[in-house]
Length: 322
Image 1: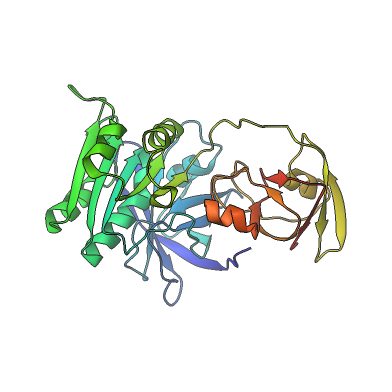
Image 2: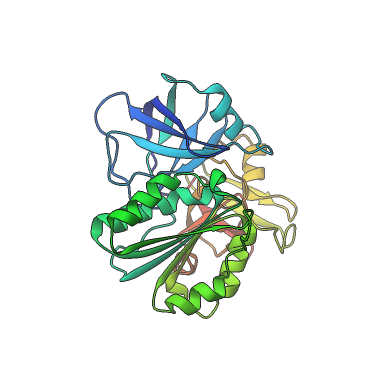
């Protein structure tokens, strides 16, 4: 598992970015923050005990991190707490940045597709590509312009960079229509690199429309997992915790994470849906049945790590570095 240190930061800026979106500036209590790659995110440990992941929007800075948070009415407590309880001067613990949605900085043309708050990692990519002088097209899908966070910053980027083009798709406004992803593919071709982050419906449409594009050119990040197609299936297996010298049976109806928590084994976790990467664990032996939405096809084939909140075992035994 990738080593993730913790950092102490202070909220020194808050800004309304859209009708339900607020940005937060997180400044270190001392020194500089670790460098950030476009597409990276951090874990934010909230005062109410919840841990949530937020993408970083400012890959070119180290004196602060900037995140965007959508106030979700169906929130389990994370986004509501961020909006309602945090104030200037609030101190927080965060993780060092992790990146499961990396940008190919050498690509000749990047096509970015964002839905709603999915704009946050793609804003970072547009900023990085602009700094590199690379060509990019960003399709920003939202119901209305009032719900589109960071829109002034995106427009300024496109105006400042001749190789950057912003396409706003506001299907809730008069004359608006949903984005036609097949038209996007026809316009830019299979030689571009395609990135998408947003609601599950957009992600599903993106994957279906771009099925003919080589997998190496398709990059996605889920904020919420699709409905599982194999929930509860699979046989029981044994998981061995090598460092703790303990073994447990994982039944079909429970995850590895559930079993470890039931036996008092502390494990970092957050989403429990296989989308955030917090519970990524090194595999020592055995073959995982990968069911996450974080690892790339190459990373799955390598079987070096797995997300223990959703993934299982293809055989009868797994050994993990816990």
